Image 1 (cartoon, rainbow, N blue to C red):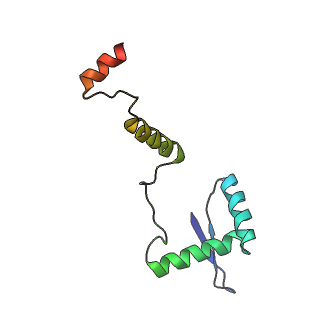
Image 2 (image 1 turned 90 degrees about the horizontal axis):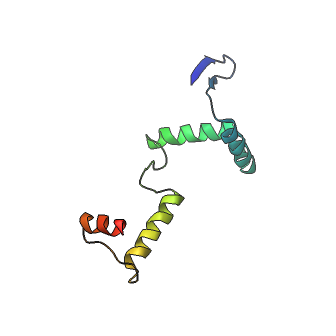
Image 3 (image 1 turned 180 degrees about the horizontal axis):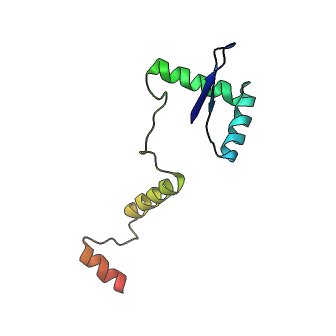
Length: 99
């Protein structure tokens, strides 16, 4: 991202940065439905970040994606299914896999 010179008439600084074109299209559509453009939305974000003195939403890696959520649910289902035999240790698992 780079900042350009501040306009002497408006006091606004032009800021240029790169964004994936699909992401920009989706953002333009969303913000248009909300009655604003991308520039206004970015200004809102920055003002809110300054007000909060941080990112104004949680940034977390603790939320698994959909595929992982489905795998976890399947594991829990298997774990509680009395028809499925489990293994007490790695030796039993290896033996079961060789059958």
